[in-house]
Image 1 (cartoon, rainbow, N blue to C red):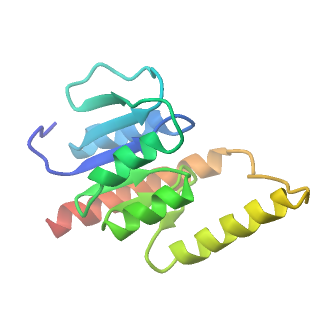
Image 2: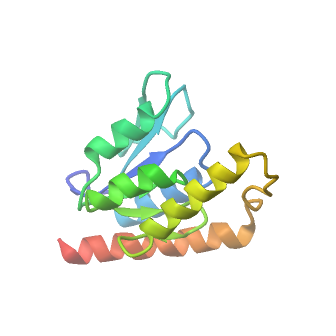
Amino acid sequence: MDASSPLVIYVDADACPVKDEVYKVAQRRGVRVVVVANSFIAVPREPWIERIIVGAGLDVADDWIAERAGPLSVVVTADVPLASRCVKAGAAVISPTGRAFTEASIGMALATRDLMTDLRAAGAITSGPKPFAARDRSSFLSALDLALVRLQRAR
């Protein structure tokens, strides 16, 4: 593990199903991990994993991550508004299903999210997200590894 590596993975951890996968890839690649949550969350005791517990409140964890995300970071989140903020800051952003949020895709992701929010507010019954599957875990591992390779080559 190269503790001097400037690369960092920020994990929006409260509902993240791929934390163990993040730890494995980060250890293999020599990248620091910062796990951000609103309440205590267990993380492995490793010098390259940092746990940040932010205060309770809407978007407090998102704000903490967005303020620090940048061109040498990967953000793992399913939160589309947070993804948008981090993409604008130059970070690589990946959902737990392996979907990469980019400058080209984030506008459509935000529009879809807003449309679904409006439909639910109007009383429409929506199906919600698909259940997390083994295929999603595999896609995430590939996307995270690819993002880290790109960042390591770029620096």
